[in-house]
Image (cartoon, rainbow, N blue to C red; front, side, top):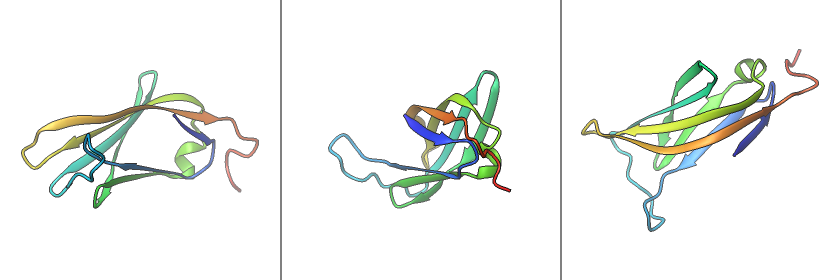
Length: 101
């Protein structure tokens, strides 16, 4: 579970490992993260550094979020094969200062 407060900048980093805990070579791979609450769906492209997937949710995005969201990350390799590597819950808690002004 990932927990943040409204208005925070959230940096989500996922290390991609095989069953033995070894880093997976992600050369030629694309990664997408999507989060959803109800029917509202937001898709983001992840950056890839070695075997680490990174995505940023800026404060301007999280200031309007509240509650539980489903997060999913999928990889598409150089052969265009697609694999889901993570399904997780993102909880955004209410903040007294959801917008930093």
